[in-house]
Amino acid sequence: MVSKIIMLLCMLPVLPIIYVMLANETKPKKNIILGVTLPYEARQDKGIGRICKCYRKNLLLSGTILLMLGLLSAAIPSFSIFMTCILTWLDLVIAVPIFLYISAHKKIRRLKQENLWYSERADMKIAEVKPVSAPLKKLSAGWFIPPIVISLIPVVIALFQPDNAAKWWTILGYACNAMMVLVFGLLHRLIYRQGMESVDENTDLTIALTRIRRYQWSKCWLWISYLTALFSIGFWLTLENPIALLLITLIYTFLLLAAAVRTEFTTRRAQEQLTADSGKLLYKDEDKHWIYGMFYCNPNDRHFIVNNRIGLGTSVNIAKLPGKILMFFSAVILLILPFIGGWCMVEEFTPIRAALTENTLLIEHIGTAFQAKTDDITDVELWNTLPDYHKIVGTSMEHLLKGKFRLTGMYDCRLYLDPQNSPFLKLELKDGSIVIIGSSDDSVMQIYHRLW
Image (tube, one colour):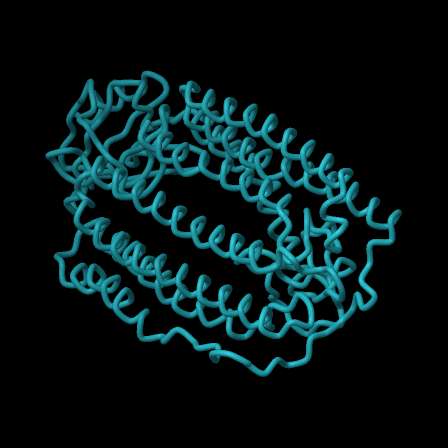
C-alpha cells in the first residue's frame, strides 16, 4: 500500500505539469505560438485565436479524463496490476497532449503558409553581441559546495557503522544522492555554453533574455541541489521509520517539482512580457529547424544540446547521431514502461515452490530463489502469521515478498514467500542469518515435519 501511495503521489503531478505547460504555449513568447513563429499582426489573427481556444479545450477535456483514470487505479488491489495500469497511464499522459499539440501546430503552420507570414530575413543570425548594459555574469560554483558537503555526511557516517546486511545498500543510496548533487552543480554550467537568446536585432533585448534564462537556470539547479542534500540527511535520519521516510520523500518530491515549475514559468512570463511588441519589423524565424515545433533538427548546427525556444529547458539536436540515439532510447523507454508492469505481474503471480531433497532445501520462483544445505540449518520454527515488516531491498507486493526485509522490533532477514499463504518457516543458518520461507502449496508443513 505504501508503494502504491508513493507511485501515485509521484506520478499524478506529471499530468497537470505537462498540461499546464503545453496550454501555456498558446501565449506568445519570442514571437512563437504553439511552436510557430508569427509576426506581430498574425498573433492578433482570429483564426489563430480559434485554434488556440480549441486546443486548450481539448487539453482540459483529455486531462480531466486521464486524471480520473489515474485516481481510479488506486482501487486496484494487486500492486503489479496497478503498476501496469499506472505506467500505461503515464505513457498516455505524455502522448495525448503531444498529439493535440502537434495537431494544433500543423493548423497554425498551415495558416502561416496561406497568409505568407514570414520574416524578410527568416534565417537572420545575430552576430556576437557586445553588452551595452551590465555584463552577463556567471553564478559562482562555490554556491554548490555546501550542498555537496551536506550530502556526503550520511555517506561518511555510514562507512563507520557496524557491518550488517543493509549497510552497503544504504551507503549506495546515500552516495547516489551525493552524486546527484554533484551532477546538478555541473549542469548549471551548461547554460553558459549555449548561444544568446536572440529574437530580433535589438541587442538590449537579446542580453535581457539571455540574462534571465541563465539566472533562472542556475537558480533552479541551486535550489534542487540544496533540496537533494537536505533530503539525503532526512533519508539518513528516518531510515528506520518507513512512515517518516515516506513523508520526507513526498515533501522532497513536491518541493523539487515546485522549484522547477516556478523557475520555468518565471522565465516564460519574462519572455512573454519582454517580447510582447516584437515581430513588427525584422525577427528571427527558425521554424524549419523545429519538427512540429518540438524537436530540433539542424545538421548545420554543431551543438548537440540547444536551448528550447521558450522557457528554461534544453533539447537535443536530432540531426546529430548522439541526438538520434538519445531520442531512440527515450522512445524505447516510454514504450516498454507497460511491459515493466507486465513483468511485475509475472513475478507476483508465479507460484513459490518449496522442495526438500535428501540434503538440500530449495525455494523456486522464476528460477532458484534460495537454497541451503540441511546441515546448515540450525533451527526451524513454524509461523502462522508474519510480524510487521518493511523492505530493505527486493520485491514487496501483495502476493510476493522476496529479498532482504526488516521485521519490526526484531531483526533483518531474507523472505521468500506469499504473505497471503501461511504458514511460514523461520530458518536459522550456521552463519547467523535468518530466512523465512513459504510456498503456494502445502509443502511448508511437510518440510517442517521432516526438518523437525
